[in-house]
Image 1 (spheres, rainbow, N blue to C red):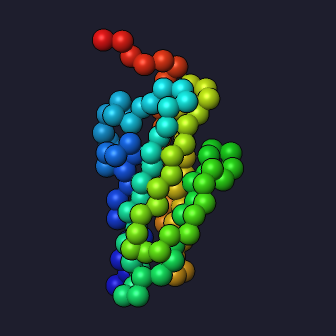
Image 2 (image 1 turned 90 degrees about the vertical axis):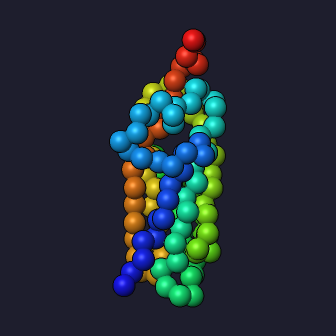
Image 3 (image 1 turned 30 degrees about the vertical axis):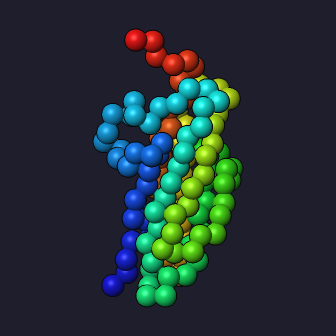
Length: 112
């Protein structure tokens, strides 16, 4: 039986849930988003997993080889406000898994 490649995704130290209010994941311009991906071992011996973050134009933002089980961590920020759709891809031992992450970038912090 294959185990899942991605055990958990955290954005800004909070578990990612697409149904959660996106306010907890929002950041202002030039403020870092911290993306953490907890990887599971696909077999008893673990192995290496290739983690890639891509933007909506398929440009690679980050790429790293992580020994599974382990954690992929990357911080990124954006110079302009708007909604970004980032695709996380993980490949290991012939398995492939990808998730879309929505990142909201605000022009300025909310007052109040």
